[in-house]
Image 1 (spheres, rainbow, N blue to C red):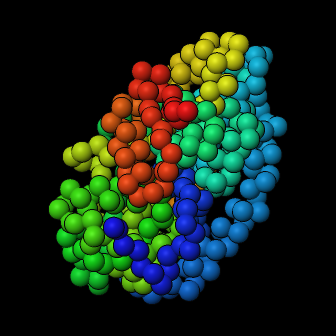
Image 2 (image 1 turned 30 degrees about the vertical axis):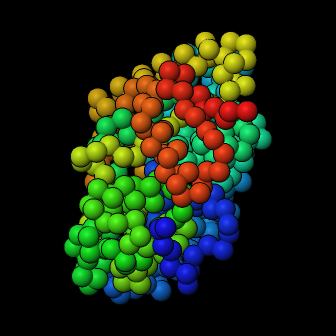
Length: 367
């Protein structure tokens, strides 16, 4: 049995996918200029951080409304795509900017959500047709009765794409994963960072019974806690790993080398995929993604301004954070989803049978 710190763990018997985190874990820390010394300034930095989060939340309804009623390309039936403010979606933002949807005859609206929970709710309610998310959300939707098809991997066809890992405070004494045995690590339940952390710890030979968590759902708070040595270490996404390394935190491990662990995915409701002309629309959507991917990969730096604008990339790293390279549209391999299914089942995040069909991308719940 994996342990959680009882002083701060969730009291819910069922822990859904994180409600504060984009699939890549990309979060806005704009306006915060961390000290080179990770220890001082916690109260001032956290206050600034909470102001940014409040402003973002207040603007959230406007963002979603604008996306839903904003620019639409093409003359066909509308295609409503949901995402969060995450780097994983950059090719489609570029497609919108360059008019690639219109050129393909697609009528696309992009709906930006403030949390994974809001995105999942909209997907389940049929308010959006497609979404960029993670396997955990996809599987949870299928288990909850929404027929889902995984269309392609947005980041994570190779280990270098979509980095997650562990940061420690330099005064914590933590220098390796084995040092974290029995030490509470700040994490959000049923998320890619938790999944990645479990896999990294297992690969390091740490027994499952010595993996201990400090439940901290809000990623910015998690980052502030490790920056101020309130927790020894935290599981974080790529942007905060990069920011932490620049401000004096210690990278203990990540999943950018060796075994390919984490993926994010583009999914669709099955009723959208199977309805009249759905297959043709999907083909054009995939071709548009591929065209945009080629543009990004050919000149990543030309997309930096768009990345900063759409993801609210933290200002201290806005000029040098690596713009990702992206895979062309390709189904997720069976092991990518099956490994997550096994993990969710073992941790009781999944209590019904869900199977993945790698030939079609369907998530099937047997009767």
